[in-house]
Length: 407
Image (cartoon, rainbow, N blue to C red; front, top):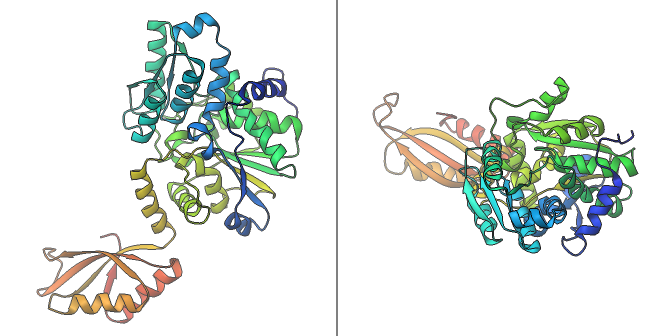
């Protein structure tokens, strides 16, 4: 596979790397034992969640800003982002002495908002998606003369992100597959140029959340197509339409784009936190999610890019709970029993005997379906996994309890 002349070149990525020397961190590549066991071969994690500002975005932002003319720098810059591009632009602007304004969607994670302001950017809010915030940023640029720093659809941004690919090839020269999340396509475009130019045998796989999967539909149509609606916990890749430039790169260079569910993402985040001791945001974990879910067949060694680690702690709590439930380790169900002294204690003791831990209990006596003298108990229980959950439910039913779900 060759790189077409209308795409970013390897020379541009190498030039971007020189610009970034001393600015970004060479992020580590760490082996993942759970993934390696799952794939029966070496699996490694490129830890861009440990990058400055918490994601790969500072690479492309700094390259783009550093190439502005003196006149453009005086006019300042404006960007639109759910958080990571915002922080990358704000940090790059502060390092280069450029004023910056960032439009973020309403509901953007509070830690990302605080971090963006902390790097010196003025933060404005517009719309409920990155696409809507981008429209507001474009209007601001037209009104004030500020330079719009697109989050993905610019050659300089793609070249900056492509430096991740150069590092992967140097850190894991035996790599056979590289898998990463794809939102607008800046990171995977740059990765694909670097990797396919130097190692055309290496497969490059993109991953999108199933609720915000613009690339598969666009690739099928042969042009960028806007989703009518989209939503996912992976806000960093919740983009309704691929860029024109990035679409050209993905269409020509990327081997496959697959999707993962919210449950897949939750399980991946839980595994990364519990087994890998890695704090990763949902968008940063989708490559791992695809590997765990078997969404794509890969040849090892495989490198999954953890593209960001900027997760709202409140979201982390919800995702962990969801991940536990998806992994069969957090079970919610209802049980009917007699509404008499000692019956609840007996039930809880029986659950404890089965090795499960009761997290929460809710009494419901007003349901008209209940018999006189009967109570319905809503229980949340921690177990050791799906098999343990099944054994617990079967044991309760064998003991005469009526166990139901989803009521």
